[in-house]
Image (cartoon, rainbow, N blue to C red; front, side, top):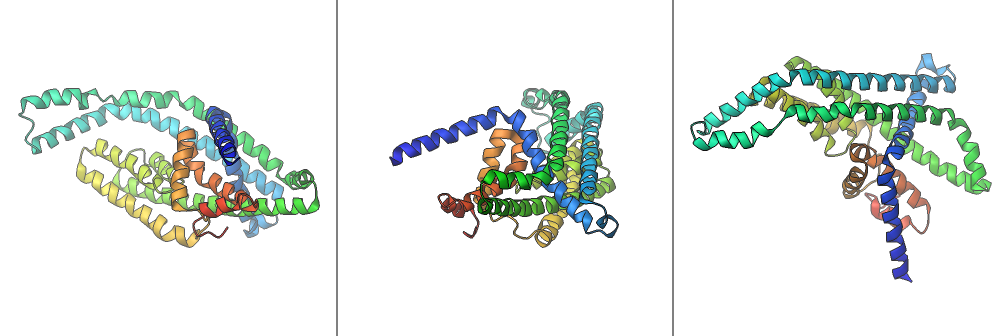
Length: 345
């Protein structure tokens, strides 16, 4: 009997994983819109605590944050498409700087006079085409634009229907007690995830602004684009901050053709990461999600394999929601305890 249950459970898990992978084009905009609703709702509630907006009805506050979200998405898409076009025009200059940097490195190592150096470079560095790397990114902009449009559309409908959600959930639960229990669970999920995402978004904006000022002072090209990228990647735990800093550091290496300049960019941006991640984040956020670090890493791997970058960004909120739901069911509560950081769920 236990073997049959294990077999059925494994088969169900594989089937769900396959459906998630096959349906990612449909599911990603929906999940992203749901996550966006958490941030927008928290933003609308925060607006109510500001004296000028406190007298504005909640419906209008939600409409304002949805409008701001739509404008931010349009601005983000415009920024990405414009900067990719500018990067293409700057590629020849970057390639010349990298070639000069490679030649200086070969000279320092005493390889420039070796007969094998020319052939080695021909089969390594000369084979890398930066234009070929940027081309697919330009071609994928249309798909990104469609996904962003769906996210804004779905988020708008979710926000509009949020007021009727409570009544529908109580009716679907069947009884007043079950409805109250379901509403309590939804409230805890909304409170924890909404608070986490809102504070995380504020921290990412602060990090992006600091990074923008740093890169602007150093003279990094496309500073605003890279600052947005740093803030965006910071949603991914552990590896996101390193990935966000790596791109502008590599660009500075191509732009200046100097390891010294790239090192200065690395130190300055890392200092901003330490300030926000090591000082501001613990004080503003605290222990929002009671998740084991190992579970977070596994969640990043699983959702990243299924949905790529979108899955890595959504991994922590979705896993935390799953733990909260598992904790409410007696049969699955031990699993929620094992997934938590301290065993208290």
